[in-house]
Amino acid sequence: MTVSPCTADFLICNKELYNFLLAAQQYCLENNCQRIANISLAIDPVDPLTIFANLASVNQINFYWQNPSQKEAIAAIDSIEKLEFTGEERFKESEEFINQCRKKILCFPRDNSSQSSPVFFCSFGFFDRNINQNYPFAEANIFLPRWQISYNHGKCTLIANIIINARADIHKIIQKIWVKIQEITNLKYSGEINILDSNKYIKKAVTSPSKFKLSVLSALNTINSNYLNKIVLANALDVISNNNFDLFQSLKNLRYLHPNCYIFSTSNGRGQNFIGASPERLISIRKQQLITDALAGSAPRGQTPAEDAASADRLISSQKERHEHSLVIDFITQSLSELGLSPEILKPRLRRLSNIQHLWTPIQATIPQNVHPLQIVAQLHPTPAVAGTAPDLACKEIRRYENFERGLYAAPLGWIDLLGNSDFVVGIRSALIDGERARLYAGAGIVSGSDPDKEIAEIQLKLQALLKALV
Image (cartoon, rainbow, N blue to C red; front, side, top):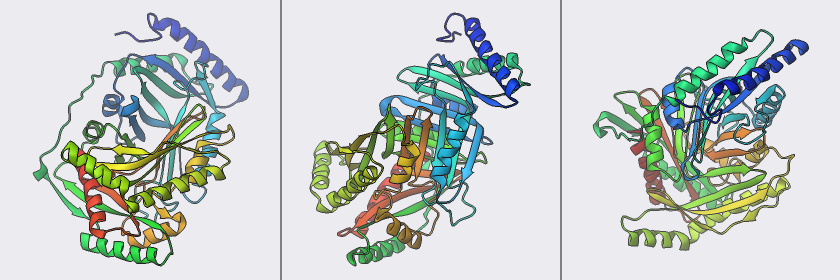
């Protein structure tokens, strides 16, 4: 086995690493403190999902992230620092937590590149307070992983975050990293998918179609009274299997079936996982350049190229769908402008997924150094694509209509590094997995002119795509 780019001689790398750790320990001794050593080493290319499947434990916090179209993936396993928040200040408190951790981190090597920068993983609830006290995730979860494996365009990096103090055994730390590298590089990739026998599970809608239809009709009356312009109503599907759901097989299926979506999974360390394949990017920041998506307005894919083109034409020409889409564009541009940014609306296009297509308009902007990614996330969440307009009024109505806790559904999930690079998606097309039980979520935007039967069909279409990956 070879390890690169410590390449031919890991002992040379060990010497540099040893000196770094020795200096860090001396600093802790002189200042009577504790620090986090962030150690980044390039390794032979591996599949982070395979690493995730073999090394992640149900009793540890972990996070999996993949953008297949950009050939990027990250597996974050266990935590070295973590915190949970609730309440209106959760985004601000999360930003402060990152800043406090930043002061304790010492990086090796000190090249300050995006490949080696410490990364924090975050998930936020749709609401700042959960009504259901038994919901398994806090309204804000953020952690710095103990181990992280990142894949980016053929290059693979192992990042270890390790506590350093005056009593640390440096030789054992180096040995531990070497053993982990060997363990990782010996794991093999498996690209097969597995769809379970459909007779081995039962399913039940949390809200019956008839009751959901009444909610849509009531929401339309509210919209027609000019109280709000749009509301997104969601439904959930409970699925019970004869066996525990296979988290890693489900993720493998998701990335195979939805190659144009962001694949994600986050765990609470107590056996529950929230996973999905989201087509909706909330923010992506690289080198101070932001891009976000206005994604609203939907139509099914056709069975043939001709049917597909006809469905797309109906979507593009639909006044109702275009109105729904314009509400999202207006909200995003206004929200970014309120942060002092100058958003640029790019050319509109279609976002074609396996069984559904959306109206899609990317929006970009340059981010000043003093604007933290979480400030943008806080400003944008929730967008009209998942809540409605005006969002505050829509959220009150959502609480009134929906008889389940949204939790992480339709909420921001992603990561931030210390250089300001960041990726967050909206947690749609998602499911909460707990042993042999899974709750699948999907929603539809209700605006003036919405047809309740079509909205129910749209939700069923989204749920079926997710169900196929899970079972």
